[in-house]
Image (cartoon, rainbow, N blue to C red; front, side, top):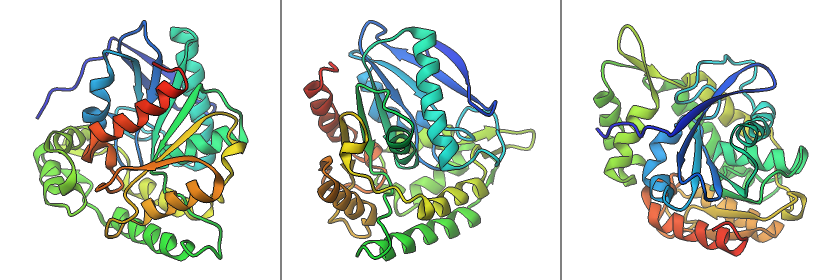
Length: 299
């Protein structure tokens, strides 16, 4: 497995409820800032194939969402979309206070993308631009995609509750990714990065950094979030980049295409990708994202 990428600096950001999130500063500190984080049950260092090539042209502040990756366990009380949205504002403020104000874009995937959108719509716009990779957008009840998304989330709840959560080695986790139907499409080095990133060392071996029951609560929470806002409510430029809506089983891609078309978002999708598109076709994802960022002067 590849060695973890050493940051230039780390900073512990304190959330509104006292939980701590570790910010890791990488890249070119004289360039615009990208703040990048993970989806549910994953960890940001598992996305290195996507964000590491950006380090020459950007300052990258990588962080894991609470109860994920390198963060200390924070318990279940704040493990919900409302607190996640507050956390988005807290990490932005912490990075700005620590490393100065500059042009900054937020780059979010899945669970964190919905959290960032909730923050923008309900708590205030703080970014120069916002890029959302395939948020699991659940349309209102009565929409033709509501029941397919509900079925999808229930399958994920069952998966999370029953997944292995104790491991003798990182290689044991890696074997699951290599054998998994969805993760077979990830780049091999991303499989290795993610296997290391999602585990925490214990006296007995390794365990999932994000407790599987906490992961399941977020899949359930997606069904009651009621977040299908017009792009105009975000307060600034938002790019929605979805998985391929034509892929077999690609319900999140179809839902994001519907959100983009119906609610006026700047929308694209990456052909031939599933929900983890950033580590399936990272170069293509960067190309779409960078075109948007350059358009808005973040270059």
